Every structure is written in C-alpha cells, then in structure tokens.
Length: 74
Image 1 (cartoon, rainbow, N blue to C red):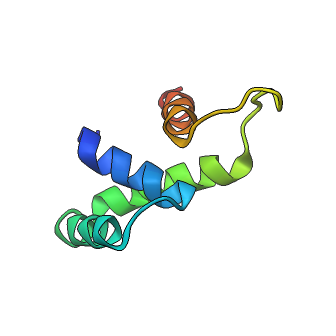
Image 2 (tube, helix red, strand yellow):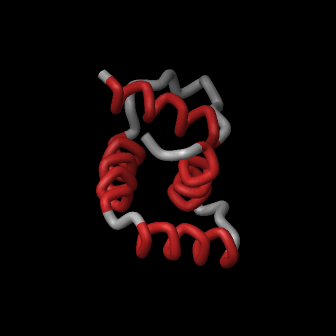
Image 3 (cartoon, one colour):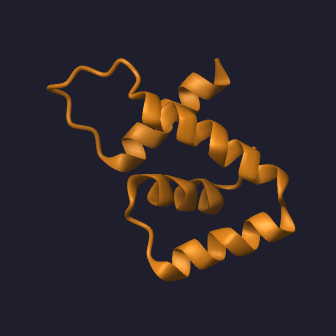
C-alpha cells in the first residue's frame, strides 16, 4: 500500500486541490514507482463513480478519499 504522503497527494490531485509542486512530486513518485499509477487509476475510477454516500452528508476530500480506500479494500 502507498505511504501516507503519496495517498494524500493522490487525494488532493483527485479533488483538484493539489498545487503545482504537489503534482510535480506525485509525477516524480510515479516515475520511480510506476506501479503506483495503477492504484491512482483505480482510485480515480472509484472517485468518479460517486459511491453511495447520502447527499446531505458533506464530505471533505480527505474523508471521501478514506471512504474510497475502504471500498478498494473490500
């Protein structure tokens, strides 16, 4: 599994909150560890599928990412 920093960068990237420095850091990580890019693609798929979360429940991007990780572990 990815380390916490990379997981946070992926979450920020998926939510559109990543800075250019963070995107560069993530790209550099993927150059060194290309297999992790598959994990990001998997998470992007879950992220875009909008899992069954009650609409009235407002989730911060980190909470949404944690929910996605839980779904991926199932």
